[in-house]
Length: 206
Image (cartoon, helix red, strand yellow):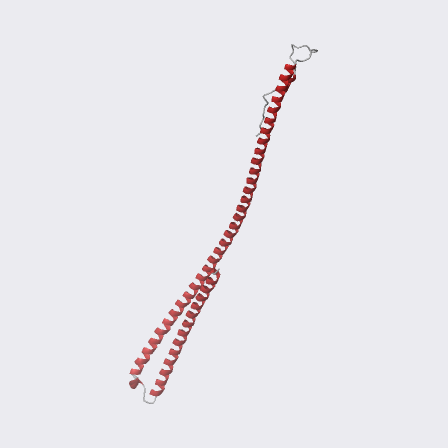
């Protein structure tokens, strides 16, 4: 904003001579004294106006400097906020990628667990069938042993008993092998789950 100061005195009005006076006549001392006083007053007014103008100029310069400093500060704050925003954006992208990766890992783990559960159920079913078959065969052998005295002669009885014992032993071995397979499968599942839990704990650790 520009400030326009108008002087109260017009110097031209002070120094010009009245139209009614003769151009060749000398001015009177009183008139010269009056003009001198008016000039001195005009000079003083001009000096005051110059001082006031300088004060206003200094004040405006101070305001301009303050506005410039504030603009620089705001620009610095804006740059910091933009940098912080970029940093937060990158962090959000990293977190989204990590969340997606964990979801995929969890999905894979669920598929592995489902597969192990299916194998366990299948093994249990096979074991149940083997047990039922073994129980039926054992029941048949027991029924046969009850009638050994009527069906077999004393000479063949030891051989039949040995054959029955061998068959029973083979069935027991088969059942024991199935039990060992089931135990190994369960141990492998527990080991895999413990390893995955350990890996998850290491990934989450700072």
